[in-house]
Length: 257
Image 1 (cartoon, rainbow, N blue to C red):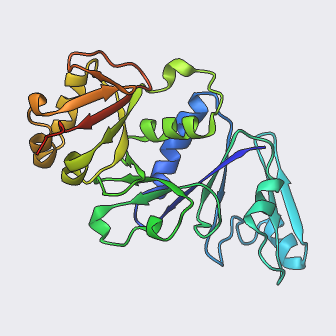
Image 2: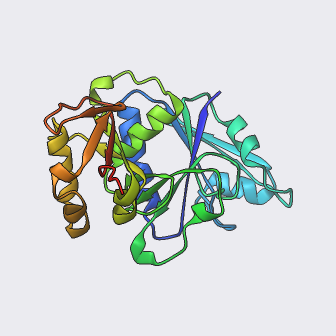
């Protein structure tokens, strides 16, 4: 059975561009991907006047057009209710992953694509099926935060979430999973996220990369001496080397009183 992941978000959030980038990465790693996109009522993939269009206009329920490059099947509902997402998925050829754009009310695991500049409420507030937030701004809450400008980290999150087989594993980006605790979580407005290890070899490098995000991050992570860090649930020093898929936790020291 194919894994299914939805991308949900408002128009103008960049879903289509992001999906395009993620598909290209997944396919390059050997993952077979199909996509279902919900469109507006009057969409048409045919060209008026072409033979296939004329046959549909004449009343054919289904018209298949085929060549040595591709084939397409067009089905006219003609008043019959729109099929469910499950029914549509069943009509696809076997694949590793089905990406769904639209169908935001269906009960499937979803990534919410959310941009701060749009000023719109988050869908995840009312949708328990959203498993991560893809955003241009760190956001408070318990959902993992993924950088909307880092499609490799997003693709890798999908691979891990569904345990997809990757044939070209060396192309998979190295990442660590970072969690923030106590007042750090409050100051950074982020509970957890996935961070690419580009140029990062130690915990100090990771903290330096996070501080480069801006004043809020630079202030919260300014003094290594005031922070504690754990890697894979073991307290470590900032010169500890990081490996792909490490779990990193930053938290302030516990103070007595």
